Image 1 (cartoon, helix red, strand yellow):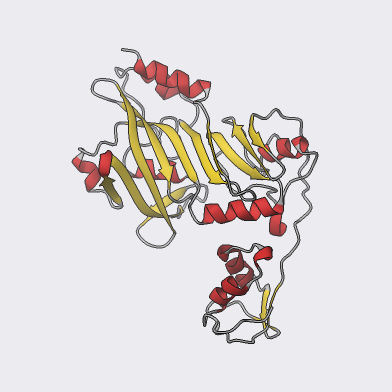
Image 2 (image 1 turned 120 degrees about the vertical axis):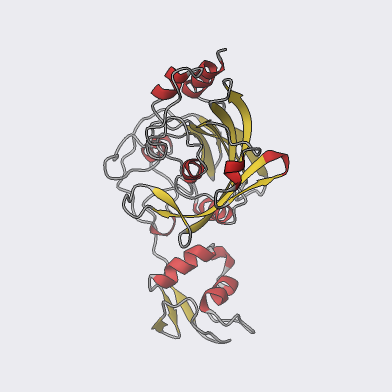
Amino acid sequence: MTIGAAPPERLDKALARDVPEEAALSRSRLARLIAGGAVTLNGAVVTDPKARVAAGDMLRVRVAGADDSTTGAEDIALTVLWEDADLIVVDKPAGMVVHPAPGARSGTLVNALLHHFGGNLSGVGGEKRPGIVHRIDKDTSGLLVVAKSDRAHHGLAAQFEAHSVNRRYLAVVHGVPDAADPRLRGIGGVSFEAGGILRIATQLARHRTDRQRQAVRAEGGRHAVTRVRVVETFGTPPAAALVECWLETGRTHQIRVHMAHVGHALLGDQTYGGRRRLGGKATGAGAANAFPRQALHAATLGFRHPVTGGMLEFTSALPPDMADLIAQLRIP
């Protein structure tokens, strides 16, 4: 590829401008390719995204083909809300891992999808997670979109990168994140928007001592923004609340970390809620304290179809365990 006239001075920006559209390489993917030594400038490997370029320079980008998946297909029932030639939207049950990993090589969503599709899933750029452009935790239930074709994979990944996908979750949390609570206004990264919407904006990174957890950082990490609206409160005085959370960004464990950060951890979240329990006199305390997973459900998923361009939006009703938990919390 030859750099065109009047290019940006930086390599990464010049690549983003001039890479052929049909290559469908996002900015983040190009950054990884540069860092991995897959880009040459006039025949020399360059790993600095800020390297200077000029019109007429010759760039080559080496893009590996998709790895052959060694994941086995398994006949596992799926709840499918939408399927066409390019993508599928499924309603994942709590307890199902999205893709194989050490300790969970079978019984995953990918195993089920490979059987459903006869072994055919998008696996762009050497990814070992075929078709997966986003994920939800094992013990979170709800909606996922999965790519069946490379063009859909590229298009969906670009929307997630641009934060244009509408993802809304329902969660049951300890206490009530009320705009009238002065404690909340003293927590770093917390503000309130019109209608009592709680906005949490922090940096998130891996916990310094526990690599399985994420943590709020004062600096470094990745920017993360969650908005929260109280839907219903439970008890007098309220001991818990049903909240709707929506993501401006999508970081690992984002909702769980942010809600714990503001003192309203999810019921059942042993990782971020610790041993916190509802008091024995609170309505539904028994059900709440025995709830076996984080009370989190991916309830709404909206995006633009990556091939047709049409808008799609899907909703998923609360699963039986969360519906029963809320029913118990509502008992007078």
